[in-house]
Image 1 (tube, rainbow, N blue to C red):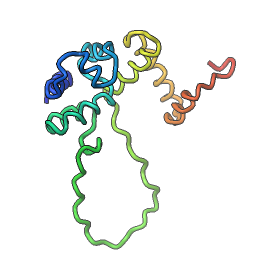
Image 2 (cartoon, one colour):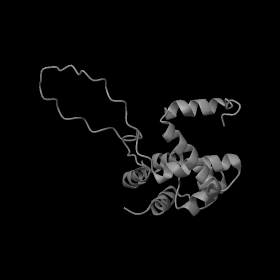
Image 3 (tube, rainbow, N blue to C red):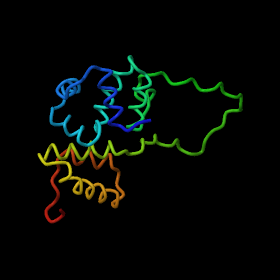
Length: 168
């Protein structure tokens, strides 16, 4: 299947993005971020990968599919390809479920997801990713230990409410 850096290079060639500045302009990101991607072995932001996938899909569906797999998704989930129709249902008497429907499952975390979070923090702090990775890991670890709703926690953090005195 090839590693992510090889696949991204194939996509770049297919799209004619031969120099880093062209890739940066195409993705709408800084040249420094592109350089960081190259150093880290491929495009680490799922959003940036999705842009590349959408652009290469009309030209090379197989290559788009391979890049999608590196971020734990596929062309159907990205809305680029229609899902295969389900098999015809077998006639059965309707059944009522006593259980509530299961909540949708999130895709499993990948190295690309972790790198994207670390790079976002590093960019905000104007630090290299290696300098903040342990801080991000500690924060996520503590949130998991607390067993709280991570979506709700993210909303509270984004709201910018300060911690009460003596509770840091």
